[in-house]
Image (cartoon, rainbow, N blue to C red; front, side):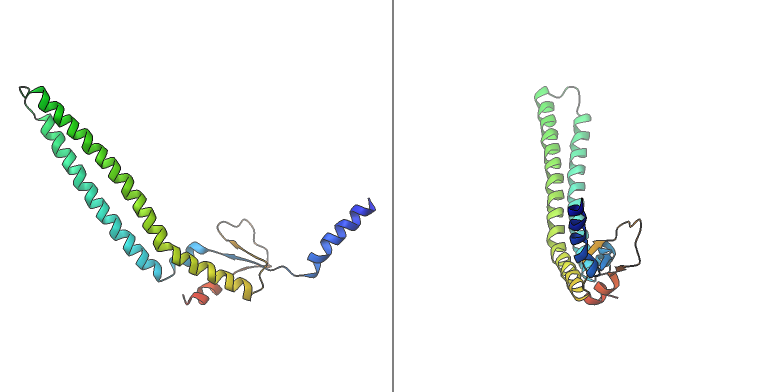
Length: 164
């Protein structure tokens, strides 16, 4: 029993001697305030628009061929009808493949464009943490309680990044 008490005191003593300093930050708000984000958004919007335009062209082509098939006369040979159905199926597969490729490419572009911005933010947070002697810095998503010894460092990091 005494050994456990001594052990507990030995564990607690080092943390009692040092004041721990915690910080919180809202990285979403911070990143939205960066001027680089406007360029990232502009580039992503432009790429998205190009893919949407191409997707609409493919859909229009599919609709046109489907209408042609529906309006085909009953007297048309069965082989022609089968070929048109096969064309529609191939076009549908092409549309699905295009949608998947476009989604993957947009995700890749977003990661590529956001990577340097994220790294810049992480570096600034680490610098502020080191300069301010913070023990830990947490993301301030939905704090249920924040004690008086926790500091919101979002403004400090913004100033470190030159953002108002």
